[in-house]
Image 1 (cartoon, rainbow, N blue to C red):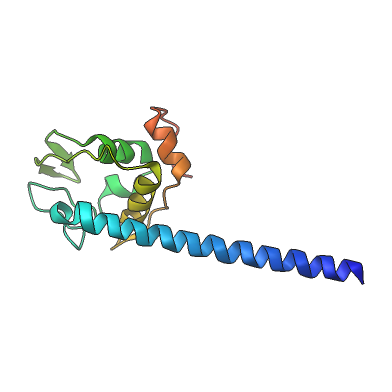
Image 2: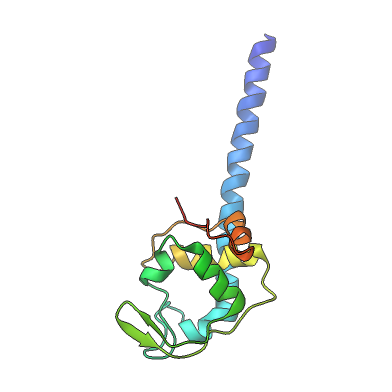
Length: 142
């Protein structure tokens, strides 16, 4: 009889863990959406399409869905002030730095961007962001 109670307890604990994990992931995407709407939308637009010749699109961009998370983290944190070619088109508007963003905020907004619109890339973990911020290049997705 004791084994049965232990199994039920373990089963219940696993179910609760999975439920909380799914809820946390959904909350992170919701946080990412809020950050995007308040800090990114003006330049990159509601549909992630950007502004031709000025602000790069995020929807369908190979740079956004690539495995180089470190580059994206550094651009969000430090900004970007160079004319850049992305997917055969050039963009010249500066990307504003966000030095106040925490690793969790960067993770949330990148996860939102990489899974929104037509993008089907992996989410970004806080650990990946922390590694990128330390300058370590081992931030590729699996």
